[in-house]
Image (cartoon, helix red, strand yellow):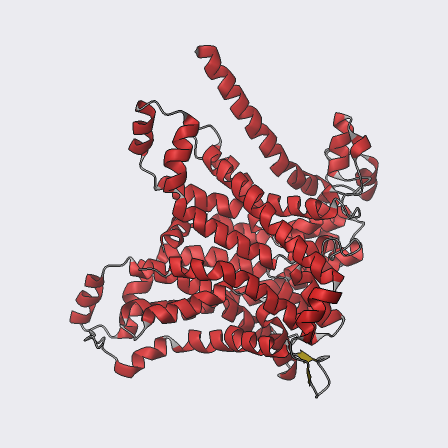
Length: 276
Length: 294
């Protein structure tokens, strides 16, 4: 009985260890390589520790690899898109759940279909329209299109959360003389912080990481966001892993910070979305 | 049939709350999607003012003459099957694993989740070098274990390339469904499992008779979102192989983009995206009806 338990525990930790190796090794390889000189990288085994800590790769990726430009563009696009997108989605979810608009369930379904459509279904006309309106290679063009693609998921999450807020709160607020806007801004939004935090993470991640539209609507290097910029960097320095890995690590930092800050709301918000 | 509604104050103005989302949604997704469908019936290079109406010819040509399209379609189906069988199963197993009590649980969860926050391009860069035939991590590990003789140029060998890319996508992708399953597992009351244990059910029986049925709703959501994501898969393939070697890793997405923006066959490109939508509709319709049910 006792030895049986020990065997069980040993197999459990053994599997856990193998799993962790699969998940951690590529990341360690990335980290170690970024700190190696080229000589060290090409001369020693993949998972060896750097012989000395070599920070030049980061400086080079930052300056010569243009990572500072891509990061700046990513921050501008996310800084505009995430808060404004969530505001617009929240307004719509508020109308759908709390203003007794006609056919609110059908309206919601129409928005939801957009989540299931692949971006490719709208890609060609978007591209045509953007070049006709001279909006390729502009922040506004990319920002506007990202707003559109974020709407279905944002409304899904926020509607799920708003529905769980009791209607009595609205009645009390109305008796106190709240207008629709005040009810939305002063009552419903503050209660919805957990759902909003979840959306901030997910929206930031998907905006920061979006590649397909960014690579088609942006062709000038100085306007590129991080994934398209990294792709360009990869094309130019594909054989130089120490430099590439430094570039990847630099571009992970902002999403990692957002993830750490909003992480505690994450599982909570996700389960809210599951319950719909 | 008329029902009396409780009127919210604000009258017609309350529709203003819906306006920004509706305008942006219609202009970015709905109208372009319809226009894209319309374009799929034309032969057009994207510049010429005259589009030539060709009826269903683009579709017929795709299915009868475009070998790459058929490969792409096959690859998408392989990708969906692998995602459903491998990614979903592994993420469920991982969720069960990290739902146990053990030391360092939070750290393990964080590590398994971490690749999920990376972009497809980053994953492609990382794994291109894992697979690199001379200096890559995989070659290094195989050397260490002494099985380097079965090592190959994983990404430039047409018979291994798709699986190699899929494994990278698996490494990246399990975090999301794992989190959803974890959230689902928290909703299962502990006394249900206890009751099963007292009745003498084995762990495996408890899983199939108690846990899995209770996770039904989560499972539907995970499956639907994973299948949809598999239909659209683009970034990691484009950045790792560009659809090569010899088109062996093309998917509908990558081929649609090449047809449209590399070869200027706007009619063919939009026909491919219409086919993508058609395949996805089969999954979308039951999903939407499930999600929007009161």
